[in-house]
Length: 219
Image (cartoon, rainbow, N blue to C red):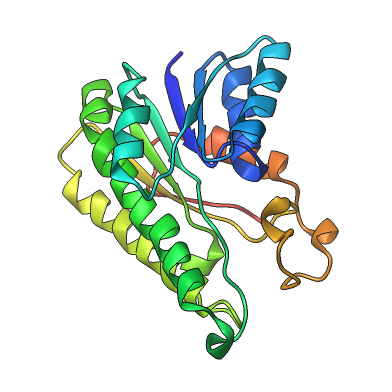
């Protein structure tokens, strides 16, 4: 079994993915900014007999990424899951929120992939970029969020070209909204309970994680 590094692993889909990969014997590295959530996820995994380590990491800060990766000898799978949402009409959006969204969703994904590349190349590993359907089509009151996800889609599709002669792969993962803490700070979705849970999404991602160019999660 290999080493799996997951960003934004303390809650939601990242946490569900960590559980799923750990169940199959992988060593899971839980990366994120909120230590409390990461430790909870780690304890849950260890209580089920899995192996996991916590890495405090801000994907928008190169030095933080460098320090996190210094603690991992080998990376077989990198899952760029860390992301934040920004919802509302364009005129309502604060500059700071726009910057945070673009820095986390775009810059964070690019920097983490760039920094992890040497270890991924050595292991002939895989990168999975969690994009969502916001990277496939524009949506009402999601202009900046969609812009960030379209950028990650373009980044991933470019990696397909750049790495086509290398033994390393990049997969774009597209799914709709899920019932996770992602919606706690917004009323953009009036009833998250009606959305699919992250566990089912994590299961499909795990089953289709074979180096293919894209994974589409059914509604």
